[in-house]
Length: 125
View 1 (cartoon, rainbow, N blue to C red):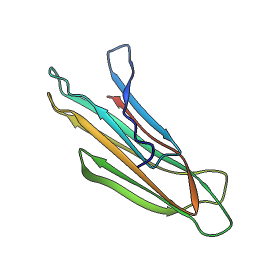
View 2: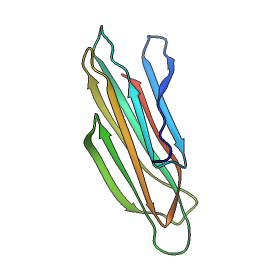
View 3: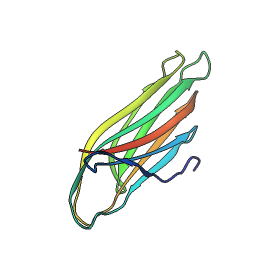
View 4: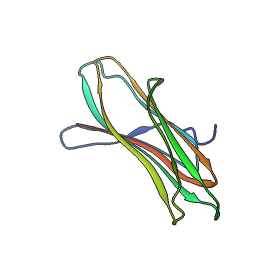
């Protein structure tokens, strides 16, 4: 599996909101691990994005599958637009109970296309 990386807190906002992100340029798998908080429940808006480029004049497809704590959350396969870039994106919310960690995994797949970027970001609501 290429592109496996772990997330790290990007910053805490003015109100202490957590922000996490991970990126795998050209990768096909990326994991975002958000550690548990022993004091409070949190709610995150999570954004997954898979950016690709069509390789040739023939047909091409790309797919994105998202797992949350190992369970299937969402998946889709679509034809790849022959323009300079195309993407599959998913935005969803997830509550994280006190004392629980959260792992989000994004898996990209291409056929006749080139993977450019696979990323996950999470921002606390």
